[in-house]
Length: 257
Picture 1 (cartoon, rainbow, N blue to C red):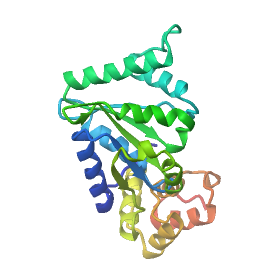
Picture 2: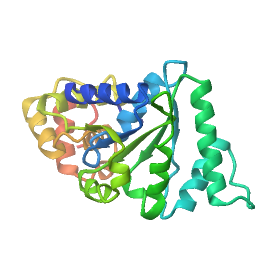
Picture 3: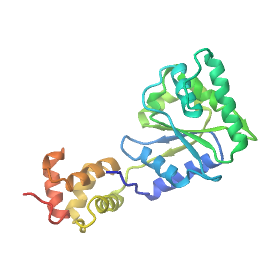
Picture 4: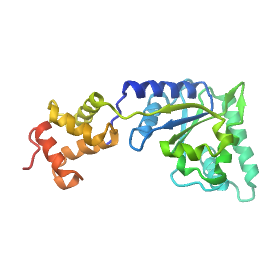
């Protein structure tokens, strides 16, 4: 089931800052948040909302895996922007120059920016960071040819700052916050309505407290709990006792006990 997204006031403000940076072609943007707080989902929402047209964006996503050196990252980027592996007789520098030329011409010809999303800063390692730096050097009329969004957990910021040439290029840093008590309740009801629209009723206070205590405002955990509530097999839930309790408090006609 697709995870629903909840625009909390704090995260909505942060998303607006990110979109302003992408729209104005400022270059490098970092999204910081703990695992599961919704960094990737927020990016997907931005793409859904703004992709396409002259005033939107042209999103590309770096494929999964780790990039331990320049060659690996350049090859993947060449596939993204040229649709093929680099020619075997081309040097790494030639491939990189052609990639930068493509991005420059695209920036001149099309008002909507290319946005490269890198889901997890830890995937970029070693001298592959130098590729990010080079791509951020090119601009037309003060606008960067490629917009880059890197998702990072707080503990990854230290390693990121080891690459001073990249850090100096950061234009916008947005922070993704866990949901508060009220937002957790609203988001849980929203997700339950999505997965079991005819079975949701008002959360009693005890259910709200348990849900917030266990999830700590983490949207991924909230969805995990809600999905377990509508499952007919209690073994699907890693927390069967809590699921059993919430199931009886929140849903009608689903309990198997």
